[in-house]
Amino acid sequence: MTDLSNDEARRIALAAQGFAEPRPRGRVDIRHLRRVMAKIQLLQIDSVNVLVRAHYMPLFSRLGPYPMSLLDEAVYERRELFETWAHVASLAPVEHQPLLRDRMAGPAAERWRRWAKHNARYVDAVLDEVRRRGPVTAGELEDGGRSVGSAFWRRSEGRLALDWLFRTGAVTIAARPNFERSYDLTERVLPNAIVTREAPDEDSACRELLLLAARAYGVANARDLADYYRLPLRRVRELLPSIVEEGRLREISVEGWKGPAYLHPQARAPRSIGARALLTPFDSLVWERDRTQRLFDFDYKIEIYVPETQRRFGYYVLPFLLGDRLAGRVDLKADRKRRALLVQAAYVEDGEEERAVARELAAELRLLAEWLELDAVSVGRRGNLATPLRRALATRSRSG
Image (cartoon, rainbow, N blue to C red; front, side):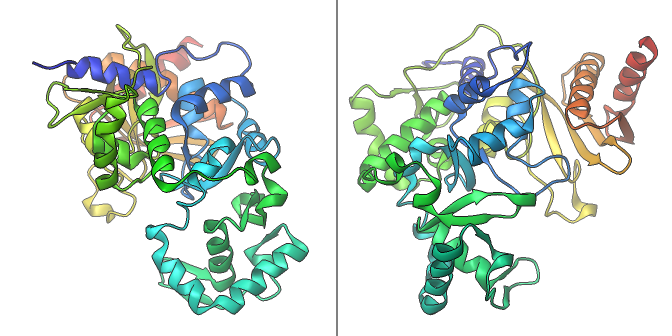
């Protein structure tokens, strides 16, 4: 006998991720941002800018149009959020820095550790320069070193040294001029109360991060929970029984899921979800692709690195959340020269009503274009939703 149907689990997951509440009707301010971050905990940072930088979009998905400067201020002025390695490169609440402090240069950073050890004198010189001059970007270093790495992923030695110092906590990101990292000593950037707070031991930090992931997901299996902060799966499985015994999580079964699932005690199960949102590939709701398949019966892969002739849906494809379903997907690009939002392909999922999905998607695309200060939405011809979507956009245009 199952404890939850998959439909119930899906609604719990959506509520935990902030999709059960209606978007604000008035001006969006720092209080709204804080409420979203209290739910999802992390915003993934990624350099892909075909639409908008990845960390800005999840807030739009949950809040609707908001001033992007609000997020920048929270990170680089208010210091309520900070850049760290968590899921991957991420923004997280600054109070979580002690939990993440010793993980940044963990086993996943072994390649950087070897390089830093081999180039210890140079790394020390870069740190001395930051101490003397900071904040500085890699391009501003007096000796930026030579370019190293593969043709696909090249970095200057200066950038490698700064990134290693960032991973060890010696420096942190003070600003992002034109998305370029500007580094300074951590004690000159983050609040003193955070920098001087003692970090918990490894087990305690892992337990707390696991619980933060459980709250952000609502209901999840062990692999889902491990993925949120990229915790060692084996350690997560070892810790879960004692956490369940303490009553901090409840072990349950979910219809169609293999093995146990874990329900957070604060999880809510709304009777319905009225969401409408476009989700980037880097949104925490769809990070774990296997979980996305289980919850939504939605096969989703990012195809940026897939050769064009082998792509199924497009280069930068966003799932479209409608109600409690992923009802479609669109390949989007912001053409800033033409001031247009390009829908290069649009698809509706099997079993969904084309006209209803097209109508709601058209409204969301107009809202997105307005937020990005683009004047038009242009729909191409690829995909089984392209024609209905073009008609829905044209109908609204004719009606004023």
